[in-house]
Image (cartoon, rainbow, N blue to C red; front, side):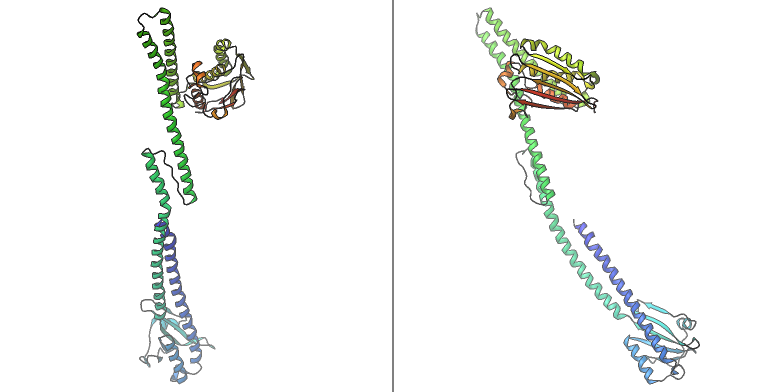
Amino acid sequence: MLAIFFFIGVVPLFISTVVLINTYEDKAVNNRVAELQNQGKLLSTMLLPTGYLTKGDIPELDVQISRTSEMYSGRILVVNNNLKIIKDTYSLEDGRYLVSAEVLQTFRGTNSRIINKENQSIKITTPITDSSTNEIKGVIVMNCSTRDIYNIRNNLENRATIFAVTLVILVMVFAIYLSGKLTKPLTNVVNSIDRLSEGYLEEGVSIKGFNEVEKISDSFNHMISRMQKLESSRQEFVSNVSHELKTPITSIKVLSDSLLMQEDAPVELYREFLTDIAEEIEREDKIITDLLSLVKLDKKAGDLNIVSININELLEQILKRLSPIAKKQNIELIYESFRPVIAEVDEVKLSLAINNLIENAIKYNIEEGWVRVSLNADHKYFFIKVADSGIGIPEDEQDSIFERFYRVDKARSRETGGTGLGLAITRNVIQMHRGAIRVYSKEGEGTTFNVRIPLNYIS
């Protein structure tokens, strides 16, 4: 943050200050040169007509030249065409001769201008020209100080330095304050994440600040809520597994202890108890089988054995296999196929999922009810609908029926031999095929499951 403010605020200010000071220096020096040139031209027009270059010593012109020299804190030399110095405002070189490159260059028609930054001075030459013949009769050499310009420049530079230092301090203070204000909410998020990693799932976070930070807070709380739900589901699953596995074993233990306590128990009692024990063992085996199926389905979809099969024939086989159960309960099985469907699926797993849906529709139906299975497709998906005339599912429980070991009617589920894992297996299989399942139900009026699966498997 400090670096950003420094480069955005201080560096441009520093560059612009240097540019402005240098611009002022160049402009002031150029203006001084222009003023000296104008003064030189003005003097040259006054000197030639009065014959000053030959006899000199004209008080009015001497005063004018001296005044101009004092005005610019410099020295003015007037040289005639014989290179003789007619006037020296310092009165050091009067009557002597001046032979210099600048003077000779001016007699050839090229004015000279020398700016000396080290000595803080400007030296220019101005020709004294006869307007009638354009002949150069003499040269005015003006050597003036620019110390006042550089004094102003140094003063500006010092003020700019003070201003820049002050600005740097203010930027640092503001950057430290703002960065602290920005990072404090994020520090709270980090602390909350650390607490979460230590297992404190019950703690949320409430952060007030910028809109983006508040969104992070909301997302974080949503994540905690989701993790709490998953943790609760995991604990409930473990509890249900323990209970479901323990219940048949407890029943077996009670039945076997009852037999052992009766030394002379009749054969009929042995047969009855052993039948019950066999049923409990079969129930235990079914629970373990379904649990193993869930474990396998929890793996990645890469375990799918995808082949292209005829879905119509698959449904006919499933209905044929379940028809004895339906006849036993006087349930009418109805199959509707609107078109031939060929799709890329795992035949074993999809068969298990559809079998669970139809078997549930038969088990949780009314006497002399019906189960209707229909198949349809479009250019992208195939659709399987399993509808029944059964007991229905309460609206407040429809979101929970795909959870493991969840039963709407626990007593009836145990009577029908359900483990509470069938719909969880079905949903996993359909999701592995990149499909979707929806339930529509009304208590006492039946249930409809709609399944949608892509015709071509998407890896």
